[in-house]
Image (cartoon, rainbow, N blue to C red; front, top):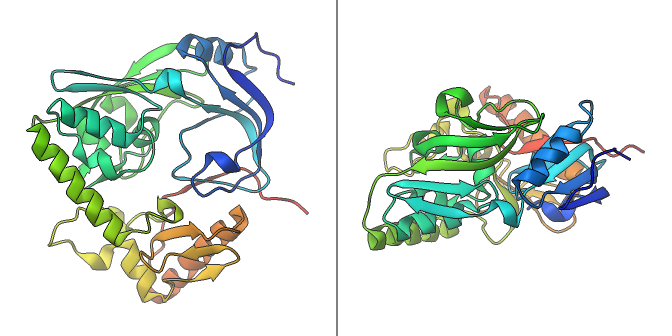
Length: 308
């Protein structure tokens, strides 16, 4: 047992994580902590022994937890961290707020954060992964991120502190992001909602949104992102090189590369984490053999494999 002062949130030992990820796979975390509020999180981190690893987890939309589980305290933020407020063109959202909710609330107030509407997951993950689409990135609109450090201190970070890159940012080791402030350009609320509706329709037409997936599996080669523009160069897209390698629809156990969009790894219902990661590695191997391109995972994989 870890020795911490009494918490007001929920601390659960040996908590399976499969039901907390979109892919519905994963073994248990040593502990799962769901803090009641920021003060609860501060005191927990401050009292947690320094040698105990911490893994902040959002809604699990971009994550494979391996079947053997995670030797760490997983921290998952909930209702105390999902508020959204708008002041002028500045939108402040708790790390647990869903990207889609932030986009809608911003549009209601005439602030254009529409690119967030089709990004699965929460604001904490969007900042951590520099999420983006349609040519816009979190880094373009972020003004401030607030974290609780491993020592339990509340610290504000600014874009220059985060070293944003394609699908990456840097946070201090063990820090938990609790909120972020964005500034978007002004727009007419109805126009913004209409644009989001069109984006959703296009997404549903081209992506397996009804299947159990974690979004894009691999980063686009050379760091090129899907902007949705008509002049996109598709030979640099992950889906294109996967198609060229003949891996659209490929399966391993209960895992499949979606026939609808070949850069989406899906759990058809019986997949283990090993199936999903193994199929992804097979895709990477075939793509390298056929094109010389080494695909990089966009889905985060954490934890230990299941041992016999």
